[in-house]
Image (cartoon, rainbow, N blue to C red; front, side):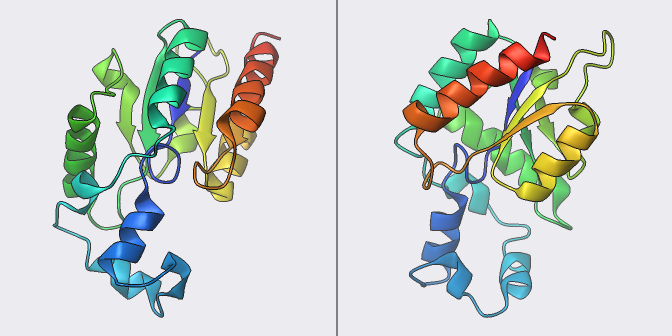
Amino acid sequence: MTIYLDMDGVIADFFGGVATKFGVDHWKSIQDREIAFATLANTDFFYNLDIFPETNSIIKFVKKISGGDWGICSSPLRGDTMNSAYWKRQWLNRWDITPPLVENMIFTSNKHKYAMNKLDRTRNILIDDKLQNIDQWNQAGGIAIRFQCNEDDIVEYLFPEIEKALQNANR
């Protein structure tokens, strides 16, 4: 069983980065988000995102509770897969939070394909901020936890949810 962390909104401040990039107070203030996000293609936008103050605590906890079996499962920007994945990997290297196994660094829009371990069919855990990813992961047999770092408390919410998910994964 592997615990996967999403990047954007969970350990990387994607929404703050978008707001800053487009000069708005909140990313939802952007009038045409699809056009705005398209301008991020073929840039190093993901490399320049800030880390959340809680990120290192999240990583440390996940490393410990997973016994080192953890990874990243993050969606690339639509239409910019190779470039987005490259800069996301560079961001992980920059902040020294790369998973121990390179195969556990996954960049895909089809996260649900990793909900179950391919060899032993154990349930993997995903921590993600996007409800669509949560629903698809759960439907594929995995265990997903909805978490957004700038909205949810890691000690009161995330850590107990991970412990509960681990108990459910072993059933």
